[in-house]
Image 1 (cartoon, rainbow, N blue to C red):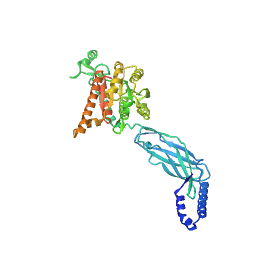
Image 2: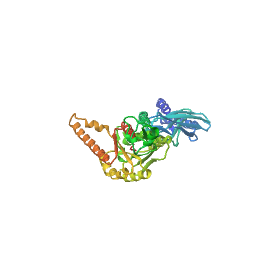
Image 3: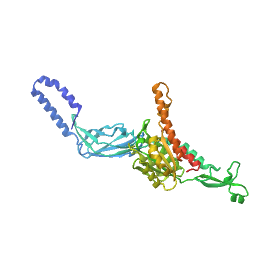
Image 4: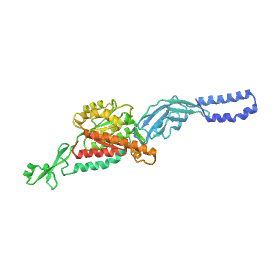
Length: 430
């Protein structure tokens, strides 16, 4: 049961009457009248228990984009239900409105639509639906709540997709070149053509030259159907925020751009998300299935405040990629986690695979390093310089072990990682 403001107004209007009567009997009589009116209003109000509720609408939406969920309220009873309905969602679901007027005639249904603009990635679950049925006098209302589960999954926004057309153009240019790109591992024979000045003499096909009566050279193109394994670190360092988002979200964005580019290049792409255990995995998907599978697997992930078990990661990588592959480690370049956890297991990975490490850099460190205004800024600049030197030292050590390193701020990491992939492909090093 719920009382309305109209009852309070009626009680306020009755104060002069009670004051004129000037006795407790008058007060009790007036209160009794109000009570009778409230009871009558409740009896005449439509029942909320018998309502039949159902949901329909979007189950998934890209973060920052609107989604709609429709609530259908059916009234199988013989009395009109007039009042309010509240469709409750958590704040991060970004509900534009949650409270709606409701007027459902007997044996009819009405629909209300909630527009949601999620502000956080992951699953957003609806709370209970509360219906308030107001009586004809508007003094009191029946009220009840209904459990009506619904989950809206906010997918990673894939902001870096704006870089995809330019990288695809570079990929088409790379695959369409007729001169020799490089000879050896990572290239495959394309066709024969006449020798022109500047061609590598090592690409001359002497048998074909003898048959044609002219000097013929082999042209090569980057191999297709290579294997990429994206390894996403979901441990402690991934929880650190750079700007307005965790490092994990920036790493996801870079992984999505690289996956989209590599799948268009004809390469096979798998995903492994790990901290101390496997958190998510995508394997064996076709090019058309890959991106939907990746965003669905990434959407509910949150970084955990634990150190990643890199020995377990290495074992998983070697199991899931038995043949030579490009292994992309999306993790932090912080000295302590890398030196204590990753470096001891890297030789096992580099012995079989080409390894590329991508790390999210904090642009605030670069800003601090340029500060010289006062003593506080100078101390901040010294600390930032030390941080940059430590990261450069770790990157150099990784490079000495044969690991390509890409270290860039969140908005630059996706295109830089895509460029590194294209460079490896052009050089025939995949």
